[in-house]
Amino acid sequence: MYKIGYVEDELDLANLVSKYLKNEGYEVTHFKTGEEAYEHIDEKYDLWVLDIMLPGGLNGYDLIKKVREKNPKMPVIFVSARDQDIDRIMGLELGSDDYLSKPFSIRELVLRVRNLLNRSYQTNQEYDIHILKYNDYEIDSDKRIVYDNGKVLNLTAKEYDLMIFFIENKGKAFSRDQILDHVWGSEYFGSDRVVDDLMRRLRQKMNRLNVETIYGYGYRLL
Image 1 (cartoon, one colour):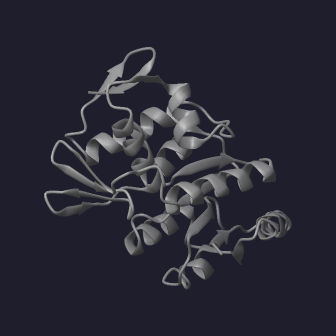
Image 2: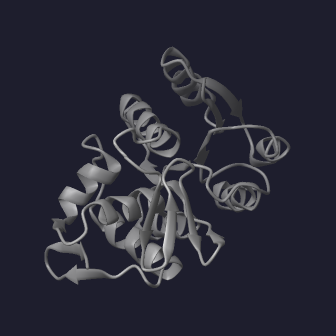
């Protein structure tokens, strides 16, 4: 059973979301403030859902930094009452895997949670071998770990998914919409700008990942 840490100060919304997630079979722990959640950062969770705007001294941005310090690969979804590009981009910069603006469909949140957990923890059984190599990078597909000359690269779950998608489809060109469907899932309804944001972060971490930008269309791994 996956365990989810959920930080939300709107109690009615939190109770409803928690109910839906529990009905899906997840174990959900709700925290009303950033300070309350921070006291439990060291506990075992499989995913965090963080509201950005929280009462008190710790907001969602502060919390994701703490989460990433403990586990750089922890899947994180941001939710926010403000639908502004700066909030979305800042969340992605800090390593969130997804971003959802309020008011949102609770069913959509549940689908995004399910998709992110599946991508983060379920091994793709179609791999014949679990070690892939590209430009001196070694990728352990069983453990979802990328090595650069023996050093582990701290990729987020979504960065790993994007990287493995291109390596599995080397030489093929994909539009931003196609990448959204393959990496975020067909249930994702946000802007395709998240593809560009994630690609920029991945290129910074893997500078030998030779992805060509096809202007006005999408990307291709060479």
